[in-house]
Length: 149
Image (cartoon, rainbow, N blue to C red; front, side, top):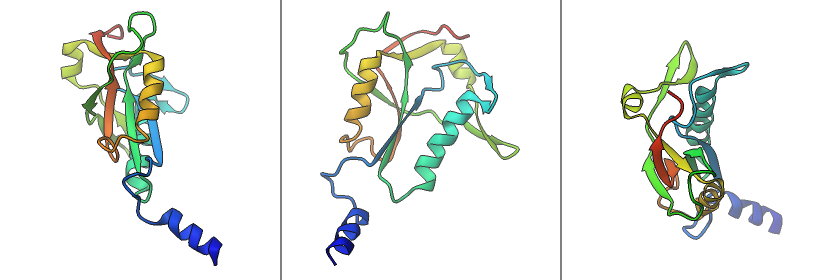
């Protein structure tokens, strides 16, 4: 009976003091160029994972963090984490989820960047950050000129 009671508590509603159960770390749409891999378009595969986490597992509390491009050479460690609402760049073509680079991003030619250690700190912070739970957000510490277009 105690085992059954313990298993029932693990699937019951989440208390506000409980950590987020799943944090998916992905990439911002402007972090890398649009290139094909043997398994499909790179950004499209990232968006597929994000969609699966947010749509297919409603019983899990989750967050999706789209990290800016890692840059340890020109982005100082220890800067304040900045969060932005994630841009919707997902499109379904012939049943396959792909990512679309918006014309606005190409014109801006800016790229969100983050130091790797700050990215790790953001992933750990996301476990207890109720403001981003259930959301897809972009995480960065600096915006700079892009090097991919």
